[in-house]
Amino acid sequence: MRTLIRNGTVVNAGGTLRADVLVEDEKIAALAAPGVLGPADAYIEADGKYVLPGGIDAHTHMEMPFGGTFSADTFFTGTRAAAWGGTTTIIDFAVQAKGTSLLSTLDKWHEKADGHCAVDYGFHMIVSDVNDQSLKEMESCIDAGVNSFKMFMAYPGVFYATDGEILRAMQKASGTGATIMMHAENGIAIDELVAQALSEGRTDPVQHGLTRPPELEGEATSRAIQLARVTGAPLYIVHLSASQALAAVAAARNEGQNVFAETCPQYLYLSIEDLAKPDFEGSKYVASPPLRPKEHQADLWRGLRTNDLSVVSTDHCPFCFKDQKELGRGDFSKIPNGIPGVEHRMDLLHQGVVAGEITLQRWVEVTSATPARMFGLYPRKGVIAPGADADIVVYDPAVRQTLGVATHHMAVDYSAYEGMSITGGVSTVLSRGSVVVSEGSFHGHEGHGRFLSRELSQYLV
Image (cartoon, rainbow, N blue to C red; front, top):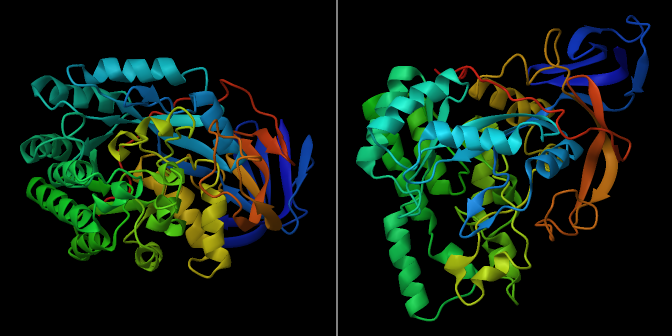
């Protein structure tokens, strides 16, 4: 099967090129000046449109257990929604429960995902129980293509790891080349602030933000960086939201340390004002770290320009307002944490291009090329080049759309961006050469996506 994408502007992290793109079966076969390649079995017209490498969302939570419930998207509905938004690869988190093994956890997540995903997928591993067995099993996970391990400085009693446990895991990562991913918030201090708020009758959703102040994200980020410095382990700060945390990352990077960070669209566009919406509407915006005051947003955009923030992921973790978010009525600490977003990441970051916050090439870099390099998928993914997987997005920069629950494809009953008018939208999406989205229709199927066994990070200093 030969498919020719004609007359588009190819956008890679390294630059743009007016070219035709020839796809043969699952791979990109050639790029050439318009009119040179052909004939083909099928043609996709891309005049006036961008031709991008498929987006890579390196932080999602499909079917994730949390507080007695599960995130609303299955691996099928979540990856189908990802495809609708131009994301052709996700990396999800396998969640180790206390007292279980990493390998049995990985098997459980394979059971959830294998044969169900609409686009390609990989796994990170959440390490919540640090002991001799789990440290040894980290090596087996690496052999199985899972070489990034997330730890938590938050959620005491659930995921929380002590500094000593983090140190041991980082030592293992340093010796194997694996990457430690860190949820950096001071959970011990936060739990005390939460208890104080509840004892004083402050129970509304906005208290979730007020009891998790940005200073405690900054402190935990700094502490994680020092532990990584002592051990020599690569460190990746997930869902960075606060100026204080960004300053700590920038300082470490200026010293040449292998410290990296991602942010998420919600921290670029939403704020604590959304958490403060009346009538429990603020619960829709409860995530951790919480949404910050708007003044943090300018620093985050600047961090994207300077590469102190290297990746934009979603932390997609959707819980319905009805029956799930409502579990926290009268007690904000019981609201399931998470915001839906896997479908809108590419579009929302394109608004940064429209507004002049980032360049066209940087848009592709933070949403596709760098995630591919950071997590051992490049050049198979993340680039329009011969030999790469034909994960391709034909993107119309001129189309207008309004985001909302009535039109999105995520399995959740609200949109965090309800009524937001944006410029640009997906026209056609190919996953390994197969058209999965075209002109407003889904053409993919459950089980098309394949598991990606990843190499070690290709982004280290």
